Length: 353
Image: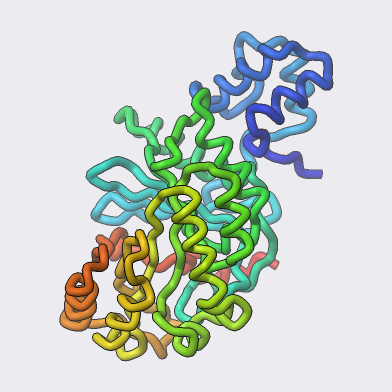
């Protein structure tokens, strides 16, 4: 039987677990420090922790449940990792270099059931949710990669935008956030973390009430129900009439700006009339529209990348309507740039199940 990842325990959970087994409260703080500050890869590297504690931890948990299956490095410094899980499934994690720091995009599910018609992540249906430990370990693997380079770099930002719908794995995703935010651990500030959802309205309300102070992004991609349903089947169950009030609730309750993600698809949703409709939908909402150039996927040949002229015309309409917006800077364009693309190609070559 495979042991769960130790990274799946929050600081409070680890403390309670050790206390239940007769260990002192301070023992958890020691273990936590070895895991996240010293970043050991074996329990028995924890030099000042007594052997009884190390043995019980080793009996019940593992520090390493992911292994590197493949790695692609782009000319702009982007690194895409394909990790193999204990059950043979593959997931993607991406390291991106920005002027403001190093960002890691994590995956929350093996596959995706949301079924956006343009997305490489949904080419393979969801097999299972990732545990909180498997999500945290993606960050740890990337940090260890940086440590090995010896350049004293650290992961400073996280985007939960990889394969899967984070709000469809809500509890594990929330535990992941609590673990990486912890000030005695990785200490990645909430304002440096963004979670993206395709629009699960009920979970947006629940997430807002948790008051974790992390940023929220919504995969919008269309300004009306007819078009959004055509490219995102989730809109059938959660149309804009349900989604927009949830977004308003988040903004009002948190006093934070929300990001609206909008992938531009040639002759589908990239016309100036779409831009005007989007501006009318947003109105005076405290929002930032992230216009995203499309990375073509072989299996979705019906969609093409919008040309530069159309992108700029779309952007200009939003600006004229006083909508805060920008065009996303692309990363890793000389490797498998689209989310899920590398995994999909490898699964075709080497079916895991």
